[in-house]
Length: 283
Image (cartoon, rainbow, N blue to C red):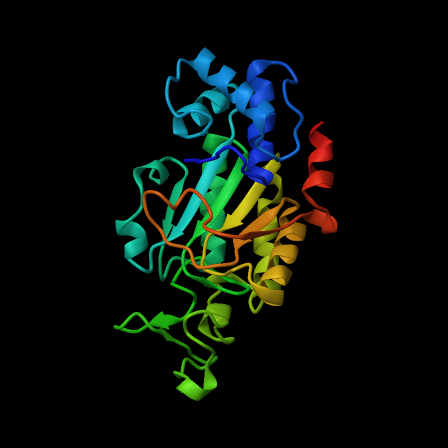
């Protein structure tokens, strides 16, 4: 469900700190989004009271469940299983009540938003919303790969607006280039710069679904990279009014990696803020 460790820094740590203070019924730690010694000490106190005897300073499913027993909030993970490996390799920690599996012919981003809202009605407001799937700079696949088709060798096949395959000279590097405007825009199967004008009103329906300390993470490869990644995250943070994070490098998907970003991460905050200014509201 979550995997937060000592020395982590970001919006998810701020959410943890808020929940820890509420669990302990005291302002034990300053909410600053940095998992340092004071937060570790408070987490240890939570574990002791909840009878959790392992894990050290790491916050995993058992600790998170204890925290949310006092403050009911949800962690929701939308996984694009158009690539069947994203279904086969899903770790057990993700397969729970907050798990949403999507694929082709599922209604695109609009259907996923409906599924997310339905989960929040049962589980409570969102502390963390994660999207898993393939990605590229400024693009997160939500249902149907990256909004393109994939060949038998695993390569990406890029298509134009009419659905015709593009020649190699017409398309970007399939390993990390930006998929061109095509069927993923028309079918609204991605959260991307190309499709953003169309999907922004749909995404805006999620604004009221987040806890004040909630955030969203895009776990596709290189989604946050470059100007396109920065612009997408900025747009998403302003639309949802919560921090939005994405990786700058390649991401794998498996038991030891699905719950955390791998490598460097870029985060955008609403209204052009930063972690320090955003966490001020929780102090």
